Image 1 (tube, rainbow, N blue to C red):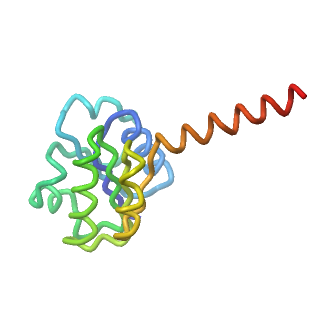
Image 2: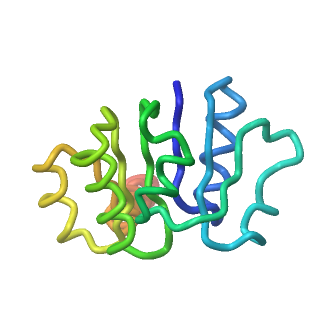
Length: 138
């Protein structure tokens, strides 16, 4: 699978590394050259400096051949806009987007973008851990 990952922070670098280790073709985009230092030495993919909202940069990243696009920058608005561009302008079949604001998730899910909110995921894990702890104490 040919995947573009927008954002090479902790999540983006780990995601790119995992996909790469599973033999997928991965291109990571970020606006900061130093962010690519988070990628492991074994990373065989491509690191591209550029703005994921810029169509020319996306074309350089190979968006016309991408099977998936995943936006995981620290900025909800940038992730959402980039995901919309990938899905609706370039027709990437599988588009995923991280948003910290859980209220945005439903809106973008409706437009065909898989949206994950770490806020909701972590809150759910805490509730599960608390309930398990209470159950064990009984």
